[in-house]
Structure formats: C-alpha cells, structure tokens
Image (cartoon, rainbow, N blue to C red):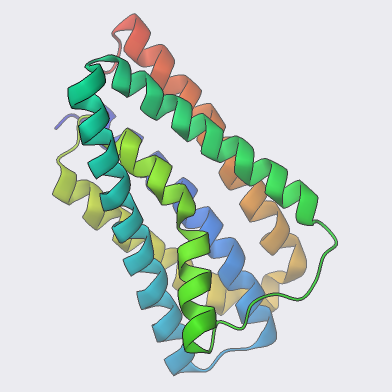
Length: 190
C-alpha cells in the first residue's frame, strides 16, 4: 500500500466523516446524554462500515463484469454521491425539525440515511489501492471520531457548522471522484 493510496482513503473517510459530523452537530445542539452519544457513535460507525461493505460487494460484481471500466463507474458514483449531498444540503436549507436519534427506529433510520453515501464509497474503495480491512477500519475510526466531535461541539458551533459541513462533504466527494478519475486516466498515483 502506497502513501498516495492511503491519502486517497483518508480523503474519502474524512468526506464521509463530515456528513456524520454535520448530523451530530445538530444532535449536540439539542443536547445528548452520554449513553445517547455512545449509541449514536456506534450506530453511525456500524452503518458506515456496513454500507461500505455492501457497496464494495456491488463493486466487485461490477468489476468482474466490466473489468477496468468499473473503476471509472466507481469514481462516477463518488461524484454522483457528492452532487446529491450538495443538492440535498441546499434544498434543506432553512428546514428545521429532524429525526429523534434517541429512539430505536429513529436511530436506525438516521444511521442508514446518513450512511447511504457509503454505498457509493464502497464501490470506489476497491479501486484506490488500500487493503479492504484497512479501508473499513479507517472509515469506522473517522466516523466514530466525527460523531464524537460533532456531538461535543454541537452546542458551541451551532447551526452554521451543521449546514456547511454537509455541503463541504459533498463538494469534497465531487472533487475527489474527479481527481481519482484523472489520476487513473493519466496513470499517476496508481
């Protein structure tokens, strides 16, 4: 595994973490008990990893069927996820309310909805040159750290961080997908 490949993974993990961070800032703004913070952190990390595994399974099948083209489809999926995140963030500006993450159903739905981007990431993760186990561990650690940081800083950062973190996560994913595709076409960076 090269340093370049690990840096690619880190960019993806941080992009996913920004989305989780944004949701957790919102929860932190409303206040959360220590046990609720632990439940949310575990649920979000588990959902991110699970969806990445599912996405990579889809990516593996596509890789067998499509060969080298599957890598480009994975990068396109990354760009698509980023565009979706940006559009959803802009569409939801000014809306309030939200999901009660303290309940079982709300926590499960919240974790699954926040991890949908990981489905597309899972497809891409196969083509960046990092062993799969390391990729999953990195995503889990960054997700847990983002959850913890978002919950802790929620009251301090306020609504601004909640809204802009999700927007920036989408922008970073778009740029990352485009950069990975360019690197693959030019043969730079593996």
